[in-house]
Image 1 (tube, rainbow, N blue to C red):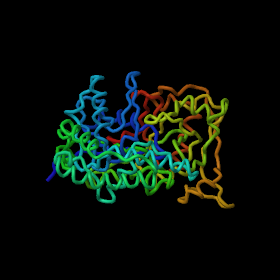
Image 2: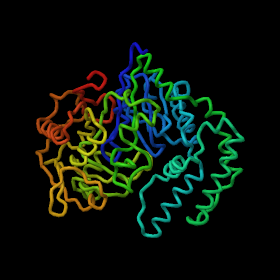
Image 3: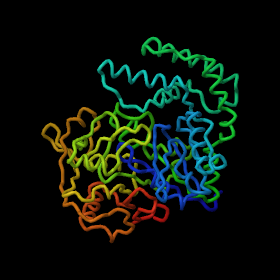
Image 4: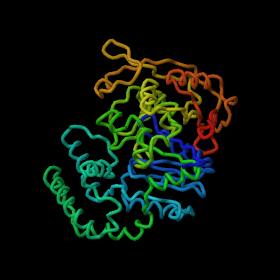
Length: 442
């Protein structure tokens, strides 16, 4: 029977990823004792700026930058052991203690070299055939999730059993080599090499493995506050995003339970992160996209001032106006309790600011993002235009310090999305934050 239970917050992106979730998670960990990643892989990138120093994370939860905060990687994450260990080493060289605070679910599927080979070869084939690249990061994420769903994945727990690992690996590698050499016209991988690489990682990996779901249950029972950190964004969700131009996992708030091994009653507050404008990396429909590559345009302003390049790939992000009709779809899917608007300061200095509140499609008006990607691509945004502001919002920490025009814009976002704004981020540093409704106190 529990006596003092913790309060738990889920942080999810409501656009196409890159909304600034890492900064928000880092900021909120002053009220949390544990941070949990529950989906995705090292295709996610969270950039934190703390006292002017940048730190890029991919697999390790953003809470690692707060002393004493426990970090968990849940079973819904696909893990490349080599990458995880290199990320740990990089942080340790910077003086961050990681291993004593990090626990990784032994049920996590492993990403192995043949997953990466298949991922890259597929994208190359799509490009050469003219069918169009999906825009994956080439990290092996999709093929690893495919093996999981097909019930043939190698899990991190297999590193504890060399003979079992060898048997499963041999069968799995035969399958992927057949695809690589036959369909994808690529080179096969050698069993002995892949097996030796995996076993070489085992001594460093196995001490990190844990029953994460039970550990989270125990943390809840003793009254710890937990923060569940999503990767990517709702519109990249495998079920609810702009399919097939999506990631390979469920990015929505509901998956925090399944991807961490806890019950949904432990998810108390859903914080949706959205930029004050919109960006997208890779292929796929983007109704409010602007001509962001052309100097002197608003899109170029968003790209340059917002420093819009992917944390993982370095690819330039496509930029456009905020799409409130797409945001409305995300609010419904995630059951968002409150919004956090990021990068408000990027809009400083613009003569006017626009927001899509619906679309015109085949002569009809829609007030929510449609499901069919061809229909999304055919949508013409219906914009509302707002006066811009010349005053700087950079680093603002109070609502009263914002220009009235910025307040009006934010209030309209609340009205269209149907969700109150809980926080506003006005710069990259953890201190550049306006708090209206604290998720751990609401």
